[in-house]
Length: 121
Image (tube, one colour):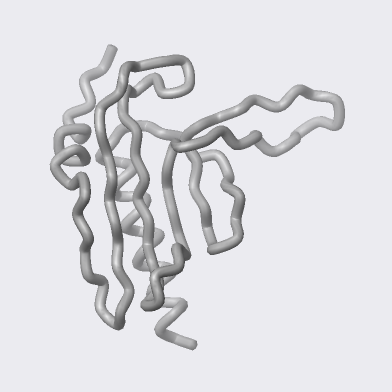
């Protein structure tokens, strides 16, 4: 099994709130758990971007299962815990967790995109 050195960085960021300017902020929660079939990497996390009034407008987490999109009409759908919420009312779409470093890269790239769009309005 490959060692994920980014997990230590993610754990170190636990309970951090990072100002993004203009009233927007990021909150990071991450802690170790026993590895299971649902959480094979042994980490629970919630990375969220909030608008100035506190509403979550983007999130990456593994707090609950989401269904994979249907590719075939009669195919069974796999439940996945790693997922992202791309807007405030999104119930979650699967996210392919590679490692903790890539999770942080993907999340902050998406934060940059969302903030760029929000500031153009």
